[in-house]
Image (cartoon, rainbow over all chains, first blue to last red; front, side):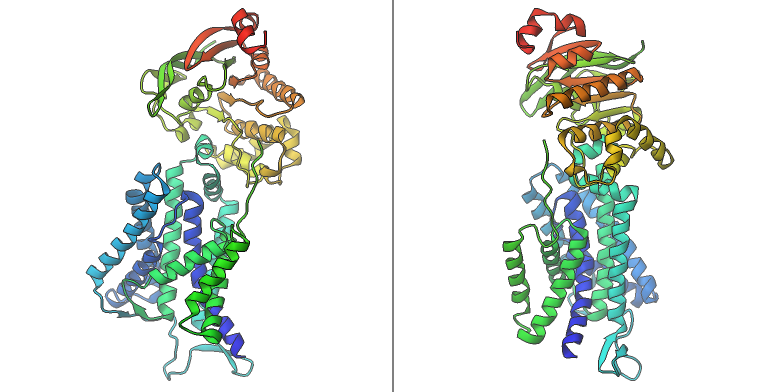
Length: 300
Length: 236
């Protein structure tokens, strides 16, 4: 029974990683860049929803929408100002810029919201008025799943299905896949590559805002560095699953979450990160493209 | 016949390398015009400049009388220009049909089914492979897909870059048959080829490009019988 509850907490944590990893993987797939500032967009999403609830008195769900809107705009601005001018630059220059943007966002947050952690109010309270866990009890109460966990898993599945449909059915989604394969060929089809990249950043950043709200709902301390560690783990998840692959980000996210939860439960809390990254190293040695990353040979 | 494309005195550079040196040519409506020349003569660069992937420092490029020099590539498709790039450049991880849909990106969605029908009629092989991932097609099928994809935008001018490259002789014949058919159906074609024999045999007019300059021009017939062309490009 313990194992099952660890598994569930791993899956719900992994669902958050998967949502973040989707943003990494989509941006990488299309712009061929690692947006290391992605984790900090999560933090901005957290603060915006926090402010929406605290200062504007918004309902948690409305605050979530506000955070998504702000992060979408933020993603488009960051892409346009910081990354677009570097489209022809070496990938190292883009990588360093992304790290720069990450510090810029963290320090701006420090300036605006200060270093004192904010106590975030969960989207669905984790405990009810009497202090008992607000959870679904199964198997005669021996297994309990918090409603927040259920919401997180549902959000992850909805996002995953939505993105899969978007990229496989819609014109814009197909154009994104075309751009990720061959930008010049996409241009010759009449696809505006810059617009497509902006849309990708917009989607990734909106998802980061969702992840921020979910993350802070579980772990209610909100600081300017809140996004960096989940960001790095989600990046790991994206690489684990095969960077550039949407189902890969989903699978990678869930696995990293479960591995982390299991390592904390059965090995050691301090060693959890080491275990996660050790598994990543082993997977990459065996499958360098990641679990679902694929290699399609080109015919000439 | 009205003039469709007019390229006047373009100069294109790759950094310090002067790749195209004052090239001028024109294509009239309904014609097949070919640019022939050796590897590195600047044929592909010329096409890239017309389709807006590269830009010329001088001169002008006009399409249906409108100046299109400096217009970004993605906006030219709407004007009726389609470019089948060298090496086909199909989207290997997408299905055949998705590739064709990308060709119709600038067209209203409602027109796509009719365009698909038209292209499938022209290339029945593509219809058989409709749901297949494009990367699994043979070289000849990939060339057909690249051409079909370009035709989805209903271009007024179809630019083909080395359609015969890497194909077995029988497939080269097939591709040129298709080019003839498209021409008969009224499509204007600008064809770039290293296979001068084949290109000249279908072309109304031809230009010979050498190290970034046009050195000869004439009708396909004239050039196929010209001593210089025979020596340099047709093996004696």
